[in-house]
Length: 195
Image 1 (cartoon, helix red, strand yellow):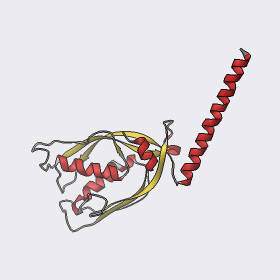
Image 2: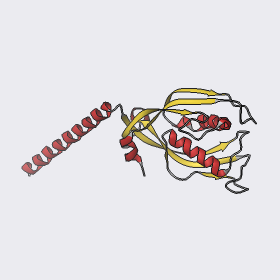
Image 3: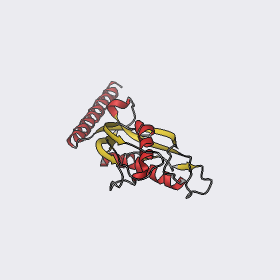
Image 4: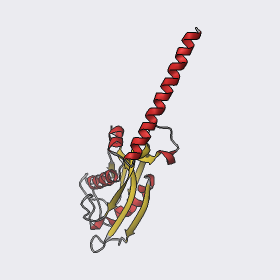
């Protein structure tokens, strides 16, 4: 019995050492690629669009929100449903809301979570009219402003610079620019966190 116990103890110590070596190897690999561990944090929200101009259809609002969320590194955890679509999904409406679930990557050191970590890194993002990587036009200033105030607060961001001078009821003749760094999955982290 004593011999059996000692074997189990040796196996336990070996297992612990292997886990420690693997964790150390992961930390070294992450550091070598400029990545750091992150954990996914789930969110659920209702986004009420209160801007004066332009008006969006249910499909239009869903499409733009989906593009902004993805560009900011979010993982969509289901479809975006917008309403009320009284004139149909493609008819503009003065008052719209969108309901959606999504997850953001938070640095493990700041999250306080014991969930499994994935590699993450800081990425520069810019929301501006006609920027090649997003769907915003000159008339989307108020939507961009509301996204910043209501949705981006759930992301891990830093170095935010906002030049948002929105003019209600006007869709041309002004410029807006929102840039920030956001913590997103690295290539390996994106594969680990995808559904």
